[in-house]
Amino acid sequence: MANFNKIMLMGNLTRDPQLSYTPNQTPVVDFGMATNRKWKGQDGSQREETCFVDCRAFGRQAENINKYLSKGRLAFVEGRLTFDTWEAQDGTKRSRHRVTVENIQFMPGGGGSAGQGANNTGNQPRQQVSDDDIPF
Image (cartoon, rainbow, N blue to C red; front, side):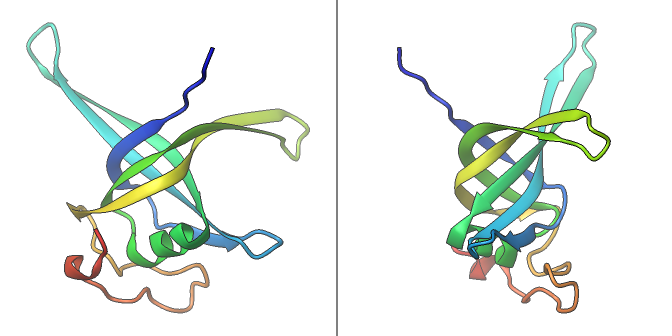
């Protein structure tokens, strides 16, 4: 039987992307996204839930995410669900699901604005860009 692992999310970044590099100098960026779901409850009241998702991208895509996106920006992510396990410093086993980004589209709008926040060095501001500068 064939397997299929595909995730599609559209939501706002919950924090500025954090760029780092693997030992062989491959760019890696980690960021969080929030997606919202609204519905009407059985009692007729408007309900809403938010799902928070950790995401990771690699290579040139990671550098572009770090350059053009910031907290609050709207993005559409396509990727696959991955499961990470590790042992914490206290010896307990830890795990989490994360989306490994395969494709991302920078969407116009969103709660933040591109170019705000600090980059991974913490010393220089992000390059100021407008929605017109972002490649859609």
